[in-house]
Length: 340
Ligand SMILES: Cc1cc2nc3c(=O)[nH]c(=O)nc-3n(C[C@H](O)[C@H](O)[C@H](O)COP(=O)(O)OP(=O)(O)OC[C@H]3O[C@@H](n4cnc5c(N)ncnc54)[C@H](O)[C@@H]3O)c2cc1C
Image (cartoon, rainbow, N blue to C red; front, side, top):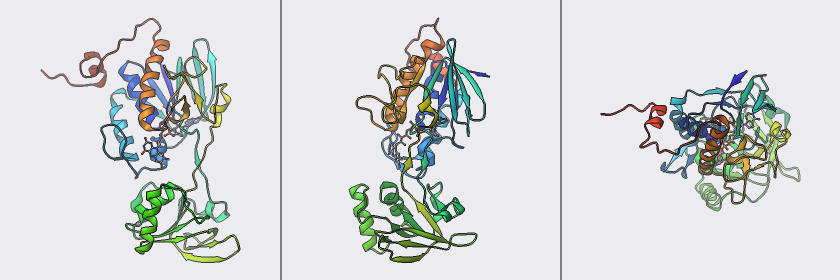
């Protein structure tokens, strides 16, 4: 049994940052994530994509944001329990008992759910061969764009991810962008850019087509695509990318007796507590009037939830608001070296 002040479910950007907020006020956290890596959507879905709306960071990628968030929580020496899905929670006196898929048990007065869209999975191609070639020519996310350099790439999908990656990879790869409808449904400027790249001969657009087969023995050599009325076209390719969005599976979180609203957890905006005392929800998974699914909103939500956790973890102590710039205690916790 691992005892801690706060069990954080989800190692996305919001789950990582709340560890810093907890650490600053002297609370210990353990973090559990069912993915095999830290970073949530930023790492799983868009590690290479630039983000432009993190305060005071004009531009960073999903990967560099995660790296910096981890750097910021280094002083707190936090344990991350990866490949572990939180399955069950139950009340034990003043604590919550939390059990994971790997049968790890935690005991904590507070749980912060930073579970994003839940146990999310990309929607996949329905044809059999796609499974055989998954991660060996068939991909649903891009971990390293350099892998695609000078390759023939077929990108399927009509939304922002498909369009953005077609634009990005067209700088150094041979791109076919394939969509089952005539119209794309991404941002206007991305659609215009893709059409311009087609005119410039940098991207080939094939609509309305769906995947019909993937050919190759140990690696992908080509695909066939098909229209609704049965017209089939063959394309030689090295890689097939599918961007069909995510299947939003809330997973076990839905079974914990929390109020739910369209796969999100309603919270009060004073402290981001759910309908259960000691269980908080922050980041994409929470909802309240005016909620914005942005990383910066999740950071604010985490700051307030952390202070509320203090009350339950240290019932006999009084929380004192302090600035990091001037508080010796906070600086000690951060390991800041004293200057004379
Ligand atoms: C293509 C794309 C571009 C984006 N661009 C921007 C942008 O420019 N700016 C911006 O602010 N936002 C952007 N976003 C949104 C941003 O990524 C999310 O708001 C952010 O990731 C939410 O963070 P989070 O920590 O709440 O959840 P997530 O990042 O979703 O992380 C949640 C984690 O919880 C884990 N989890 C869930 N359930 C369990 C369980 N039961 N047990 C264990 N682990 C569990 C999941 O595995 C996941 O790792 C973008 C999103 C996408 C898809």
